[in-house]
Each structure stands twice: as structure tokens, then as C-alpha cells.
Length: 460
Image (cartoon, rainbow, N blue to C red; front, side, top):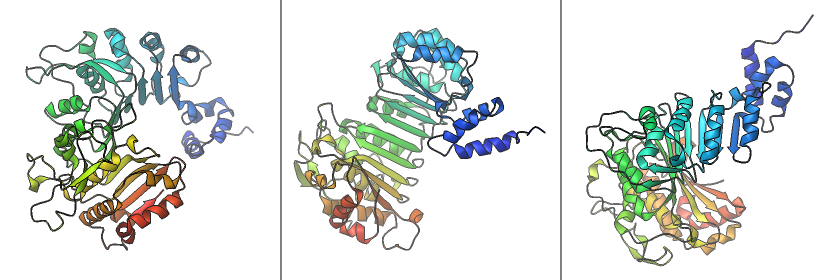
């Protein structure tokens, strides 16, 4: 008597369990059992993520069109790194990919793609796309064209803009905020004169942006009738000239922000860019204390002299100069997670500005306009080849220790050692780059004695 297959639902549960294994060997074996098992295993095998480049585009299209091909309907993530010529040739073949949920585009000059092909490409993904990444080398005519492309995907949940550029700065339409953007306007080569600027879809929950024109983008977002309230934000390579626009945006959606990741700008010559050139912008992330506060003189910071790196400093007491926000209506009440990338970056102290701006930002979360009473996790990313290289960086450990204690006090975590991990603030040093975590921890706990005594420090 021939054996019968278990119900499909049971098979799917079994295959989902195998999916947790990194080598996928069991899934590969199951895919060879019979044709009825093949489709279920294909949902989880590695080629659910496919990268197409100019080097493999011919092979990829040949596989797609093969009568024996079984994988086109299993691809969930598509990474495209092709020029405009190959992109145009690829579009007809992409129409059979009906399961794409995540799309990454790199090295594509969108200005060279005809409006008709733009429309065809966008239409294939409407309604399905959840994650969109526009990466390095992607070029558009204007910021409006960037937002027009993004706004078509109404179910988008994750958006990443990193390393893209646009050739011109367009101005807002002076007419009413009504009109049609999207596929029709794209096919016509642009919006009508009465069209509004396109909006980032309200479904977006995670927004990562880096290495592009921050000020123009966030100025545009602030001009929208309803500012996009995105709860999870990541800003990569923020420069001092960008902080005012970022601060305005953060404060406009302050009740919605749950996590914030920041890294600070390093220019192409390996040094910190324009430190001290925009002091008012720099103050946007600095702490502000009410007059007469007992520790108002205790949170002074080492501020860089004009046109100098933060290691060449003078001491001053600083506060946020954004007086347009009333003191009684400030703070980020929903913020629970903060991450500062490249807080310490290998052996070269000129490779990151985070050692200066990071403590300033944490001070603002403790007693400033970005006060975060619900904060539960601060991650400081450290990259070192060996633990001893930390001494090559100029760090005011005493001041940092005081800031962390002030932050714990704001979060209600001082003297609450018996509470669970979820209820108290954790300061996590994330050590990468080859340094021994235990050796690094032994150095830091002695330099941050107050934080260590309160049980705030973690190392990973």
C-alpha cells in the first residue's frame, strides 16, 4: 500500500522548523523527495533572495524563462545592481515574479529609464512591496522624483535611502494640495501643475537614511500637510549642518518615535567634516536645563573650537537654542531604544565624530529637549582591533559617567537593581572589529564607576 503525504499544513510546519537551520541541508534534501514537496521547501531555501547584476543578468533571465524552472514564484527579495541598459532589458522578465516583497536598487540612473518602462516596473510591485531600499549609485532627476517613486507603494513598511543622489532641487507647487501623482504622472514624465508633492506612505514603520542630502529631504517632509510619523528612525553619517532639520522633524513627531539610531559624519578624506562650522545646528542635540537646576553646571561639555576636531576643545556649559519649542512641551515620551554607531572607531580618532556628538545626544535625552523617560536601551557601537586601542581616543570618561547616571535618573533606573531587564535602563557597549569583549569590559568598568555601581553596563 502506497504511503500518503501528510496534510500540506503539517508539511509547512515541518519545513518552517527546518528553516531555522543555517545550512538548510534538511530543506535541500526534502526538496528532492517529490514534486509535491518542492514548492513548500522552495519558500524557505536561500534563493528566496536573489541578486541580479550586470554579470549574471543573462543567466538569471534564462532561468526565469526555462520551462523546467520552479523558483520564480518563490523569490521574496530581489536586489538589482544593473545600469539603465540592462534594467530596460530585464523588465519584461520580471513580470512573472509575483511574490516580491523586498526590493533593493543600486547603481541605477533612473533618469535614463523611459517613463513607460518606469510605469511597467512600478506596476509589477504595487500592493505587494513591503521593503524598499534605494542604495549607492542610484540617481534621480529631483527629490520630487524620488518621493514620487516611493509614494506609489502604499503598503510599504520599511524604507531605506542610502547613498542616492538627485540632480536638481525642485520647488513646491504653489497651487492647492490636490492632484494626481504616481503611475499616470510618471508615464507623462511628471506631475500636473496642480499636483502636490508625493507623500511617504503612512504605512512606513522603519526609515533608514544616510549619505544623501538630509536637509532637502527633511525640509520637504516638514512641508507635508501631515508629517510622516515614523516610529523607528536610523540616520547614518549625520553632519553638523543637518542637525537642525533632523531635530525639527524629530520634535514634530516626538510622541511616535520608539527607536533612534545615529552615526555621525565622516568625510571622504577620513576626517570629521566641518566640526564647529554650524554651532547653532550642533546645539540642536545638546542638553538644556532649566534655570536654577542643581546640576546645571555639572553637565558642561567639551566643545570643539572653531574649525577644529573635537579632540582640540575648550570647556563650556551649553544648552539647546531652539527656543521655538516651549520647555513644558518637550521630550520623546515613547522612545525606548537609542543606538550610536561608530562611537569608537578603530585606532584613528579622526574617523568618527560620535565621541563628541554621542554624549551630547545622550545628555539631551537625560535633561534636554529630547528627554526620554521611557528609554530602556542605549547601544554604543565600538570597533577596535584590540581593547587597548581605546586609549588612542580622547574620552572624558568622568563626564560620560555623569551623563549616563543623569540618563538613568531620568528613566527611573537609579537604585532599582531588583527590577527586570525590561524595566531598567541598559547601557550596552557592542564590541566589534576583533577586540576581546572581556578585556574591553575590564577597561571600561573602571572608567565608568558610577554606571557600573548602578548595574547599568553591559558588553556584547
